[in-house]
Amino acid sequence: MASPSTRQVSAFNLAIVLALCFGSLTYGYSFSITSTTLGQPSFFEYFNLSQDTTAPRYAYTNRVIGGLNGCFSGGGFLGALVGGWACDALGRKKTLLLATPIAILGGALQGGAVNIAMLLVGRTLGGFAVGILMVLIPLFQCEIAPPAARGFLVSQHGVVIVFGYSVAAWVGFGCFYTTKPAFQWRFPLSLQCLWPLVMLLLTPLLPESPRWLLMQGRQQEAWDIVEKLHNSDKDDSRVSFAREEFYQMTNQVSADQEMASSETLTTLFTKKSYRRRMLCAFMTMFASESTAILVIYNYSVLLYEGLGFSSNISLLLAAAYVTVACCGNYISSLLMDHVGRVKLLITGISGCLICLIFEAALSARYIGTENSSGLGAGVFFLFLYISFYGCCIDATTYVYCTEIFPTHIRSRGMAWSLAVLFGTTVAYLIPAPTAFAQVGWKYYLLFIILSAINIPIIWTLFPETKGLALEEVGEKFGDDVIVKLTNITTEQREQLDDAIRADKSRLESTHVERLPV
Image (cartoon, rainbow, N blue to C red; front, side, top):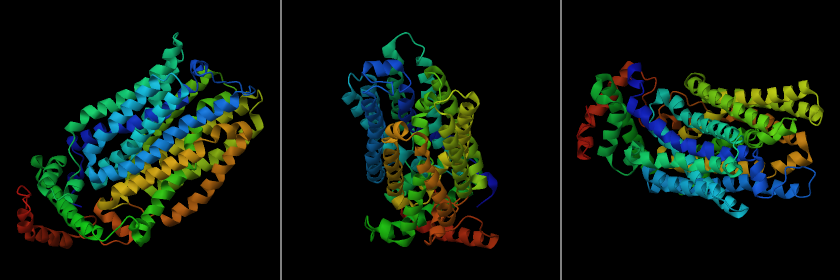
């Protein structure tokens, strides 16, 4: 690339990333709020559910709890597929306008639910909306981020998702002490409407993705946005970098469009380089979910109660748990552009595996006893587990799955990635309450075995992508890169500058009048 100064993140660029994070917050809070709701006694009383594991109605309660998570994840699965289509067909901004009103409606139905059916419909709509947002937000962030800081910027999606978990946990803990039973669970559920509402209000202020605009042939608009993203009017070195990046984008998009004209949906699985990407995306999401992260978090209050803690202390521990995760995700965002994506994933899954082994052993030995040391050790390993997951895995999955796909199939690739995430979530979360009730600690064995299998697969299969421009990642999968900017020699840079100058007439013929050459 050009000098390091040209890779700095502009205030405008950072503002867009952070504004988009309200979509991330929508997912984090909406998904997480079920966990704290399950710690509110008034919720069980209102819907005539049982917290007594020996009561005949407890089996029905388990099915309802599984249904709450299953409907959300099922809706997310469908939303991810719709999001993949909408991002290409409508553009990034219009897709935001599609998802956010649905999220508001889903939150309103849950907060105002008068029966289980209404609650489940609200969870399904909420899941559908965040399925779209989960495809869109990291994709959008990825396409406006400079290469050297892309890991940091896109990983803010993961940071804010877990911040949403934390907000939900602390809101739930605070509402536990209210004297109004309905407020105890209705207010946290209703608060889901706030984050997508803010996102909806901010959307008109956001620019469209320049890469999507290039795919639509709107080069002048794309250049205007690239220029503003790099704050090019303030610094000559930024002008040079913006010019080079736009030249690279334009040429790679042109090549991608030529390939896309002969591709079909099945090409994603039949073309070797695409098939490897799809497999990497599948393994990234499958391996991350197979650490048992959502099972542990979503039923964390129940797990702490199973370890002998009272409801209020369980809610407090759940809130502290996700606060640790939030801090871990921020640490991950700082490490990612230096350590690399693959090493972080391997380290995180290995750490989670070790923690799960200890957690299973401690649960087998001490659950049902009054041994405070053994039960305390169980809590310690749950917190150590989330430290590994937050610092190494969570944000990394979204960054990696977003950047491995070329522009013309990025939305479909992300749709596939998130469909795998939500599909795996459904498979693990729905049976979890019954599994913990029937086999207890042995349910951890499933995730221990899967993690042990996934580690060598990731180490063997995944190429590293840190520091590369999005248009250059394809080389790692065997595709041709039309223009290279990363790690080029002085002679190659001179040749690049000559090519940009020679291309001036073609750029002007497409009305990119303000492109500096």
